[in-house]
Image (cartoon, rainbow, N blue to C red; front, side, top):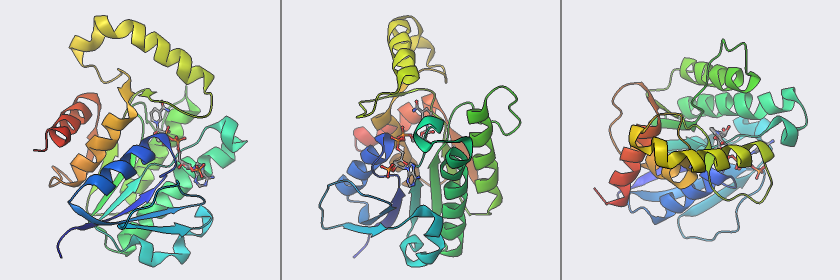
Length: 228
Ligand SMILES: NC(=O)c1ccc[n+]([C@@H]2O[C@H](COP(=O)([O-])OP(=O)(O)OC[C@H]3O[C@@H](n4cnc5c(N)ncnc54)[C@H](OP(=O)(O)O)[C@@H]3O)[C@@H](O)[C@H]2O)c1
């Protein structure tokens, strides 16, 4: 039986939930493994779950024996409780997942980062952490790393994120005047990012490390949705 095997981290999140739905629907994937401290309430023949604290990822090498690893982890300083707890999720867990993927010889590692990721950022701690995560994931030495770089995400959440809601409202007002430009800073629906991530995994990588922004994500998502 042909078909790819996927591992997904962050399946309970906004983007991760859409990635999961897309992977389960796709005929290209034969199995989907979720690893996390909890899992969405979804049942499917293709699905396997591994429940663990992500500090102990190295105890689960078999979970990483897949073709494609999708990393959709992330938190906020407020939810995590401190800068160091935020760093642990948005940097450490992502880098250790990349390292496990390399050891297991996974073909692709795809991660959601952010448009402003920059390890040298002096103005934004968030941008610095995202930049350091990108830098250190790339340094692991995987054969193929794909970094999705969305600006603000659009989508429904259970939890209230005041800053994001204000940003989304402002973007919605501005969109009619800016959509023609397809600029990288435009907000993007989470399901478009997810479709693009799965779409990217199914194409040969254009280079060992690729960064995909607004226009690239919209194009990949359109391609996935039209079944090309
Ligand atoms: N929000 C935006 O506008 C925006 C913009 C650009 C980039 N991004 C980035 O996009 C990525 C995905 O964002 P999202 O909004 O889809 O994320 P999300 O909805 O907050 O989901 C994050 C995922 O990470 C997991 N996670 C968080 N803390 C964890 C912990 N301590 N241990 C284990 N798992 C943990 C969550 O699992 P639990 O359910 O177990 O908590 C969840 O599955 C993030 O890296 C984010 O920084 C977001």
